[in-house]
Image (cartoon, rainbow, N blue to C red; front, side, top):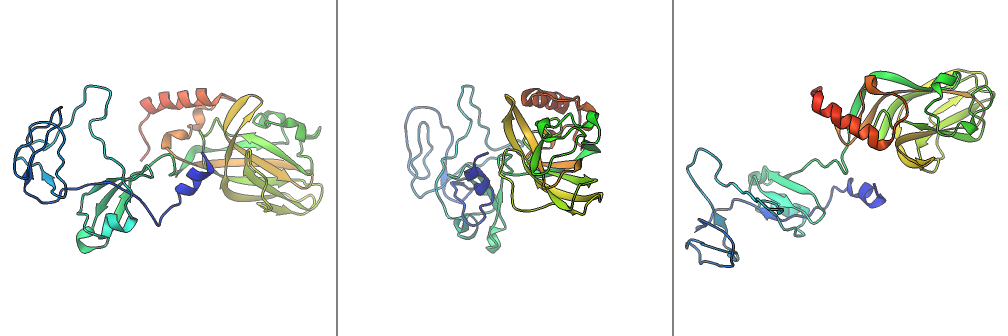
Length: 302
């Protein structure tokens, strides 16, 4: 996701919209098909575009089903709302009735309610390009323990480990978490330093990003210390493969490292892989396909 999108997901002060609202008026449309045509207020529109100006058009019925059904058997959409820049306040506080729908030129969809009392409540459609949700793993996982060879398999750069498996001072190791989450925003976990050679600190930060001047964990020499954290994850092309979710861990002294993971912040519930289906390193495409297959077979857990 680009830096602009990351900023856009935090915009709260200004929004834009085009409003389709049920405003009372005398105009009635009965059938709209292809060629251009227009009609005065109160006259049935037979064909074409309705250039009604400031006059709204009502469509009403007493049917037991919906009043309006739109179908497009071709490639086009059944309904298109043209984007138009409108101030955020204008959506909720200047006469837009309850139930209004809006499509903003920022790409978001909105709905309004509570406007009759001028509270101006505006809801925005959940969009997986900017929103996130916390999703726990079915069972917390120890994804890294450098003391043992069989728990170093997710380390993408084993050259930063010494002969005993310890992270060498001044180095960052990269942990691939793509089997657990697909393009996650963040990770919930516990980071531990085991038998560090001197007093120091460790920092967890997103894969592919610059290390910040902060620490997640501080410790004394030969002290075993752990700390829970929630931090951003990153994605990067490592060894010719896209790692969709990864974490970098830096230590300023030589130490063994343990990383336990409890869950992730993701855009969609299905972007977290149930722990029972994790089977070692896979490509992002394979992991996504496996989740899609699981989605069709497994009900949501809420």
